[in-house]
Every structure is written in C-alpha cells, then in structure tokens.
Length: 400
Ligand code: TRP
Ligand code: SF4
Image 1 (tube, rainbow, N blue to C red):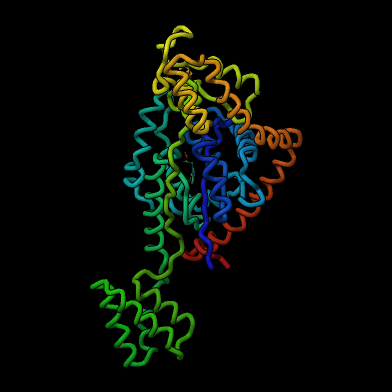
Image 2: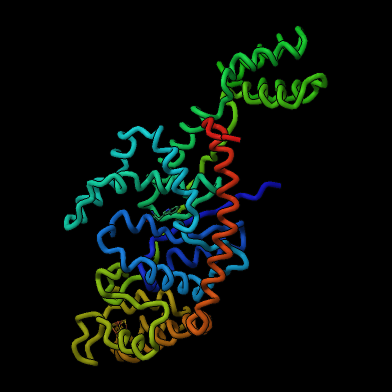
C-alpha cells in the first residue's frame, strides 16, 4: 500500500530550546515512527529575511541539526537534509512562479504581518513575496501528504494546495486531451461508449458517486482498450486528467505547553529560555532565580501556584503527588520556593540527560552529522528529481 509521507521544515535559528522541544520536536519524534518522514533546514527561507546577514546561516543550521539529533530525531527513521543542497526546490519554485498570480501571494496574511513586524528590514523584496511559493515547492516536490506545522503556517499549506490544484489544472492534461479522450471513448464500442458518456455526465453534472463507480467498473471490464486509452478515460471521467502534484494537508502541531522562565511564551527574543543542550549549572541557576508568586515576599507568606511560573513547569515535569505537595505547601507556606523548585530542576535535568549524551557524541565527531546530512540530501534529491522529471514533461520542457 502507498504510505503517506510527512514533510516539515524549520528555519535555521541556531540552538533550540525547551519550547521547540515540547512543541515541534516531540511531535516529529512521534511521527517518525508512524510515517516516512522528511525533515529539513529551510536555509533559503532564512535568507528571505536575513539576506543582509548571511554569515550566521550555516553555523545555525549545524547547531540546529545537532539539537534535532540530540532530542531524538532518528536519522535511521527520518530523512534529514538541507534545502539548498537539493537545488531542485529552486527549479520547481521558478517553474511555479510562472503560473502564480501576484494577488495570491499578496493575500497570504504572513506577508503584510511580517513586513509590519520587522520594520527594521526592507522586506519589499521579490524573494520575500515568494516565501510561500518556495514553501509550496518544498512540499510539492516530495508529494508530501501531511505537513506538521503550527497554526501560523496553515495559510501557507492552504496556498500550497491552491498552487497544486492550479498546476494540475494547467499541466495535468495532454495537449488535445479532450479530443483524444473522445477518440478513446469511441474505442469502447457504440453501446458502451454511450453508457460511459451517460455515466460521466451524471457524475460531473449531478455528482452521483455511484455513476462514477459504475463507469470505473465499465472501464475495468473493457478488454479491447489499450492501457493509455484506459488511463485517459479514467482521467476524463473525473474531469481533470493527470494529477502531477499532490495537495497536502496540514497536521496542526499543538502549541507548545512550555512557558518561559518568566511565565510568558518561551522565546529567544524574551530572554526566558532554557536551551536543549544547556550547561547543568546554568539550568540550576536559571530555575533557582526564577520569578515566583510576588505575594511570597517572606518564607512565611503563603502563595498561590496559579500566579507562579514555577507551577507551569510542575504541570509539565511533576507527577500528581509532587503537584499536590506544591499546592498544599505553597498555599500554607509549608514549603519554601527553593524547595518547590528542586523537583523542577531534577525534571529538566533528567529530561536532558539522554539529549546531552547524544549531543556529546555528535559534538565530538562533527563528521557524523555531516554524513547524516549528506545521506539525507542524497535520498531527498532522488525523490525531488523524480517529481521534476514529471513536472518538466508536463510543462513541455523534456528535451529527451
Ligand atoms: N515557513 C516555515 C516556518 O517558518 C518553515 C518551512 C519552510 C516549512 N518550508 C516548509 C514548514 C515546508 C513546513 C513545510 O516555520
Ligand atoms: Fe511558586 Fe512553588 Fe513558590 Fe508557590 S512555593 S510561589 S508554586 S515556587
């Protein structure tokens, strides 16, 4: 049976933190057991906004890949690669740019949003406008079925579906498809041809699914038909012709439950993160100095966990028993905040222990990472090249 494919990409932002782990990576790690997965570094996408600071991209990419591996993304299960190492993405992007109406790109909500947010940058560029189209190329070139992304990316997946549909509509037909289809219908013999036409009309005009099924059965039974004729008539039935690019679905990633050290969303720009491969001492210190319920000025003042970011960490790292101990001890001033933080420190360190071990292996031998990526790029490239062959042929650019 055909296995559905999962694909996702991440811009190379450098070292990842617990927010990335509890949001995106934990999901990737789960998916890699369930589907063939492709995960890649979207370095060209990083350039759309960092075109004037290119020096950081490669180091950020390697750091991020080590974090993927440290977190448990498994290169023996998933294919890991770098976008710019598979230049076919650029070719598909270019070819699709020929048929992409400007208005579709201008209407993608992230276009105006980001321009308004990143005011220090000139984002009135060709490349930035094309960001969603490049993303569409990333997805369509692997004929990916499912794309795990956060909510903010859903419009990009919707856009990708529209582009795939437009592409199939424009190029999924042979030249003179209609005429050739009519010729093929005649080959059915007059009685069957008449029935086929009737069933096709009923399906196309009234959406009668059983008419479609009957017509398919009729084609399957038709023995005097060549394979080419048969396939053409299957295509003609549903009106489209050939499906060259596959419309993907978004697999919505639940927002990370991981709050930052100050209770806001964990984010590098807020300076409230714990990195995935952070020094143990630094983690202890960060948690020990975390803000708590401001009502607890003195050790004897009772507090309210609901007003404390440490409690948010307990929700992720502690079992029922510890959580009950926190609730009771905080409200009665029975425990101090440092006592309360100790199980959180242990929880975070315990979660990171296997990550730190895996990371050390890759830090000690960077060639290991290079090999994993070289291997992944080669696999990805084979798939991309297959699609590009079909795409060039459909557009009429196969000079063979
Ligand atoms: N735009 C995505 C983000 O910012 C990254 C990305 C690029 C991507 N290409 C992709 C995600 C293809 C999924 C599929 O998060
Ligand atoms: Fe927060 Fe725990 Fe201190 Fe209560 S006891 S304020 S939950 S750190």
